[in-house]
Image (cartoon, rainbow, N blue to C red; front, side, top):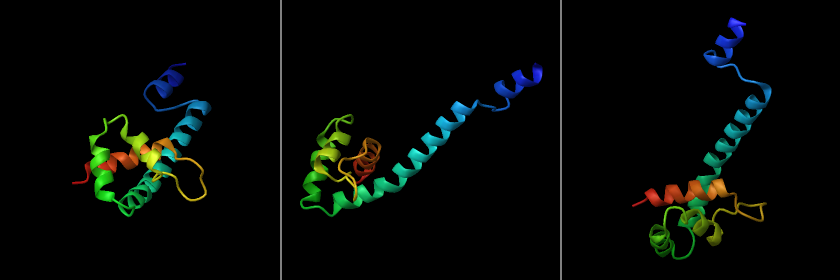
Length: 98
């Protein structure tokens, strides 16, 4: 009983459902990390990129992902709509640009 308590409490043991969720979350984060720079590239190579960047930065932080989604930059080949995680990451990268 003590081994189980120590294992789950301090040893980092998790149940199968928790492990599956952690794996899925990690995979989603990895996909977003790969796709966000593609979104940034599409944004920067679009017509009036400088004006769009200025408009993006005028949006409130919680509206910036929506701005990127509406612009279509987060829609990647083979998809019909943007992945919200990609749009958020893309907006964050763009917002940090000078």
